[in-house]
Image (cartoon, rainbow over all chains, first blue to last red):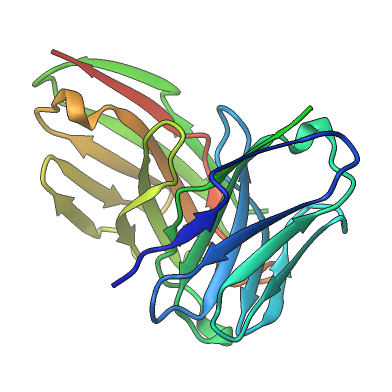
Length: 116
Length: 114
């Protein structure tokens, strides 16, 4: 059974640039959630994708967007990068049905984004 | 909004010195409370899920318990390799928010010295 993988591991960008982060979900999982973790903080929910549709969004601006593909892998896109976007971006996969998504979420190793 | 508060923020224990970490939560209908372990620069590693008050789960030196307002992670006779940040998260019933969304606390940074 393959776990959650993310790429790249590290990324350095400058303000105003755009970035795409990628996540492959664990085998058998159909739901992907993205979280942002600033240094010394707990992960903050960005959004969730269930079977290729956005299934909820946290308090993040529209320049944070995402996709989920038919194989349930996912991308997180961030436009017009700001210094405060520097963080560890975590992808978590789980299995669930739309009305009862409540199962354990398994996290990938994360992508460390630094914005200069 | 669902909220999670963890205490203490940091805890230093000598090897073999047992202790407990606390997670207090406010949630509109608890679907699950989750404990994760996170090593520096890594993603959180799943430890336990608790669903209802009175439930307990154990794994090696760790034991998690749940009441209607808080959860405890008990660490018995810890070893240096238990050093990590322990995160608590809750999942609510989705009224006005996303089903499946996890609300995390800031974590307790545990250091176990020999």
